[in-house]
Image 1 (cartoon, one colour):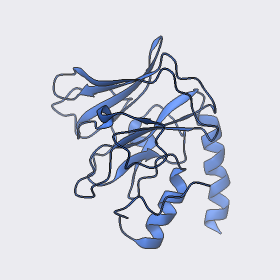
Image 2 (cartoon, helix red, strand yellow; image 1 turned 90 degrees about the horizontal axis):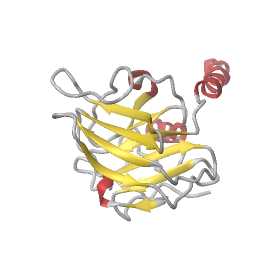
Image 3 (cartoon, one colour; image 1 turned 45 degrees about the vertical axis):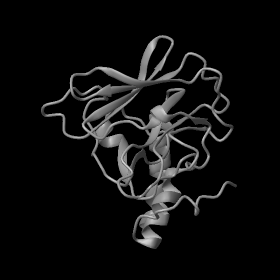
Image 4 (cartoon, one colour; image 1 turned 120 degrees about the vertical axis):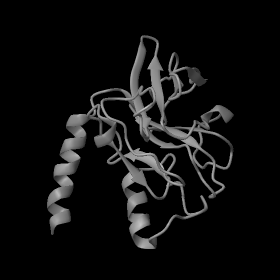
Length: 197
């Protein structure tokens, strides 16, 4: 009964906390021993043209930019997702670019449009590092992804907006991925279970 009551409230929060056209929605940057490819998933306005948008890594050790990925020429899929994958092993990839392998924490990834930074996520302990995310950093995980739950939820505070997802879900909603974790109780070390509707 609690789930039935809290779910509409959670969805209400989502609708009122996602005002932007596009956000970084999920990041898988440290696959550990899973053998899975890294990715950055964006979420936003369906069919949004990504001309002028780019992903920018910010090195926690000194703050230098690295692994800049130009998204021009692409657009968000009708379901609101866009996946930038390190390699072809990642399902639902819309753009394959080896630079999508961002460093382990403490590090940050920013999303820029033609005017500059519009979103960012920083993960890890920034006690002695340069933080380029939003407000407070989120956790740093190995073999798991970090993602918004529900998709697009954005308070401009990484510590509130991002949670650890034991089953990465590129191009798919993050909440079903959590259900998969609860059912299996461990990390699925293959992409095979992910199916496109």
